[in-house]
Image (cartoon, rainbow, N blue to C red; front, side, top):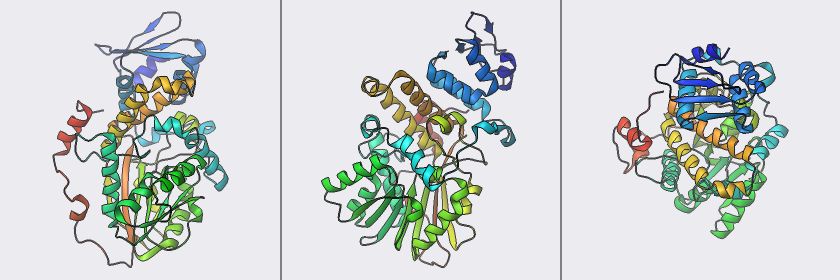
Length: 405
């Protein structure tokens, strides 16, 4: 059974060692890693559902890896990334939860309300928990997150005095940045109690609470007219079944000459999120393919103007998060147990590798009402003062080595 698993992974440089010391050897001539399975139960979990079984067993400490952990994941994720779309179906008992008004709040609470102090250990100074933009390969995480915010603001062509609605505002860093640097007024929606509390405190400290209103409510209840509608890292939690309703909310709020941008993890084809991550880390989440995301715009008068994919930037963002997480383990251990640590190490490392290998994408979709002619003639406005090195050179500089999964 394990030999068939190795064959399905295209004979990787991995050996499997069982609890009794017996070994299942790969046909690869130069093995670099060993997967140690510590009990019979783990073996059967891997056989029943390798993706979910691996996550549970690693979190429990019932399996371990000899060799570099991230390189092991690159081998496995790279092999599974070559499978056809039809081969990624998951068992019925692991189907994603629907994102209703009630379940969405519960889903967000399970991930984002586990403690602001935990996230402060490894996020940047602005507490941005979305893809950064390393427009210069030498940028720190802090600099790249500011570059991401400015990149989005340039795309939206924000002007002083305009009104912005932000759906899913996280800890408020982007809303405050828009108000502080671009002179706009922001209504920011979020259903995470802990994030809203942090955001309101930050607005008071900066004396921006008269220009940024943080509203503890669901995106479905966005109200009032705005010049710009923006959502950074929320679409993954909306539920594809609700995309048409999101489009209606956008159309309801956006001024006829307004602009909008949705920034979201995505897929090259319809596929559910890693079953273990969806069950243990991000309940209810599902990154869409571009075709699925178009359900937001089609059927209403919204025109897609530009789509940019910056997935390699997210690979580097996850790399920086993982490095900071590992550097602060002593403090994490004061808050959580070893199972939690292994869960989050696996989540961050798997996410990094998934963006490297192309199983996850990062789309920025720029749009406007179809009747608006207030449109830029070229894309030049998006890249003011930005360096323009070749993409291959940038990726080598950022990742240390250029990896082809």
